[in-house]
Image: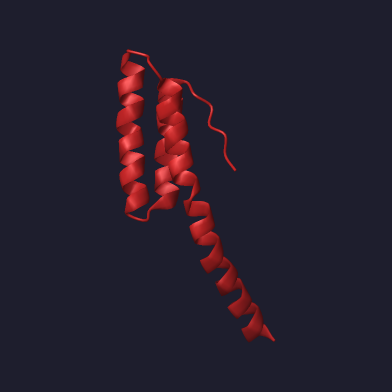
Length: 83
């Protein structure tokens, strides 16, 4: 009984990981779209952080990628919409 419960939780965790990972690109896109045609230091700082978030996403570090995207949004004064 316990064994099947542990197996079920493991399967859910494995399936949920990729589903949550898809949020990183959407957050990064929101940052890039949100800074638009601005030409201030906040834009360049936000874009640099967004680039770091994208690298973290590609490296499979999705929680860190989301945190970096949040930092980018904060630097630019943007509110991100999460799933």
